[in-house]
Length: 249
Ligand SMILES: Nc1nc2c(c(=O)[nH]1)N[C@H]1C(S)=C(S)[C@@H](COP(=O)(O)O)O[C@H]1N2
Ligand SMILES: [Mo]
Image (cartoon, rainbow, N blue to C red; front, side, top):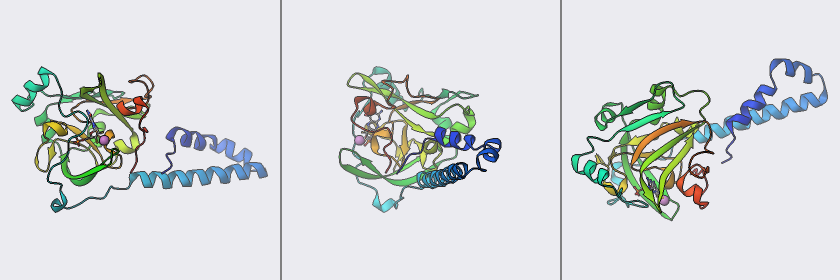
């Protein structure tokens, strides 16, 4: 799938603003520029429609008996062990960055939001898959509430764990952030998410590979650029140079 940068699409359309259009469309070169840009716009629309497609959903009967844990299987801090023991009563999910109205939610507040439940297949780049039923609020609802500023281009996910001494993090663009199946899950197969699978909160970004689905989620940040986060490649594994930032499936 071709990923058409939103910025260049908008720039292309802006370049064809009314004034410019009247001027260039008189010449043959102008007309062909217009055709090309129209073509570009049509292709961009088609690519966007592709990005908005739903991932396949399965029935509860298809759920894998044990959803494998991968990468970090816990958070190795006493603060996390205390939270785990107390049922995550002190856990907070912070929503901030380039937003008008930052806020933080407790687990009770997250459970009280409108919920989406979806049975989907998780595909890890290492070559295994598992089907699980995930429940939680849609990310788009939280972003609407925070009122994301127009200059934000990406959503960054902050996690409580470290792997090889670095903070795990991930990021997605606004198309995936507003995808209906992008949810902040707190239930797996109807139960609180197990420790190994990212308790108490983990992302589900169903049109992308497993490493994008940040576990042990503590924060959601709207940003204009990924350059100043980690090594600037948009995610923990991306920074290592192993995997692509866009992991569409
Ligand atoms: N915070 C955090 N999120 C993470 C990881 C991790 O190590 N830490 N591993 C990623 C990878 S590679 C995969 S395949 C999935 C694994 O999710 P699971 O443990 O529920 O199978 O989580 C992803 N999200
Ligand atoms: Mo993975």
